[in-house]
Length: 636
Image (cartoon, rainbow, N blue to C red; front, side, top):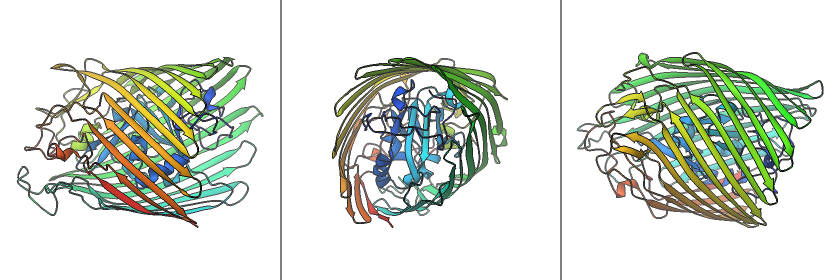
């Protein structure tokens, strides 16, 4: 059963079995996106997991962020939203990035809207696993989860101390240094520390005077403290600091023919957060949890001659109780979420959202082959009113077959912060009438068959978003609600083979995301109808690994581009090699061996400035081309 928010990392561990793409269900994992602590294969709602081993593989490709790690999970696409500074957002099953909620151990430590630069500022070294729930999850996680949830679970210290350092350098000018320390201090206390520094030089692949990759300097510090009394009582406390200066646009004061003058875009970020949870057993049968977090984010964004400064504050608190009786496992609780945005230079877009809520859910185990989870959440939003978000999921099993069906509704509290406005800024934005909240409904059904070392899964999904926000960019720069729903439907296919030392994963996705335009019903921009991937990995414990990847991205509809209305399809091939030498591990990763890049087809820079003020077109393919990175990991 899934509850109204992600469980803390301190829930009493029970030995669930994994159910995720690359690993067979015989392997065990503790999934923190559920509150029951039971086996994942018994949960009516599907949760997909990327474990520590796979996190390490992706960490060798991009040690400074989690973009590639998420982009290569089935059904997820990390879309670049601002080529000038490299911002990105997560799209789940074709739904735009603002509907995806990103959590750290169940806490919104990076704020309510973690899109934009947030994904680029999270080093994966201290992650234990990544959990994904696809589809409307407002009943589980409140507002902002209409597309799904990504929960980043921390790496907890084990019996042996871990001291690890990673150094990385790439041919595109990226330098990364990351250190992770974790150890047990006593039977009850343990802790960890992540410290990292990252630098990227402005990178102009096509030598046109405009940075295809933005430059940056970033530092991250995150300590964590864990307490466990061994009798069901536990606690967790973390705090974090991220400081980054990011800069793009024209290089070295150069003047491009279209701009007629140097044009620099930059953004300076300072983010501070603190969060934690506490759990105890009451009356020997009830589990009581309390969780809370706060984050403060400062942005100074330069768009050529225009400066936009903003401050973003997020508050979160929750208390819950759960228990079991007969065939029922239930949970209930109350939560509060606060989201405050203060744009200093465009104060007309300031907002203060507060949403206290209550939630409850009951899971009924009718028999071994069928179970049902039904529940919902009631949020009292101070601007848009009251929202009820019900959700129901059913699990069916017979022999080697497993099937899940889910249906849920949810909402999103509309704000001026969209993918487009984060890329172009707010100074030019026009909002002709008050915004309405966005409301969504989604359904999914999947069927999984496991036979020996093979696992095959087919997932069918559909969603509809009413009053979806739309940004006009062709002749004006305006934000408003659509009068007709945006609909998404598609199918995902997943096949895995795992037999040590080999693992092979094949994925395919077909997505139809439709929105009404003056020309008719069209595919949502930057959403490929078809995509596929094939990953093969050989790995020997204590020796190393060799991996080969192939990814295909189909045609995408483009908007506000003077060069084309649809992108070209493309394929990317990558190779990863890691070799262990005692406590040191050397790695070499080659991405995009075919040197596929968007500027091979069209320029990145527009011939004239767009209605929203941007000088670049949307990024629909890689901008950096072939990149080789390598380095060393040392454990001591």
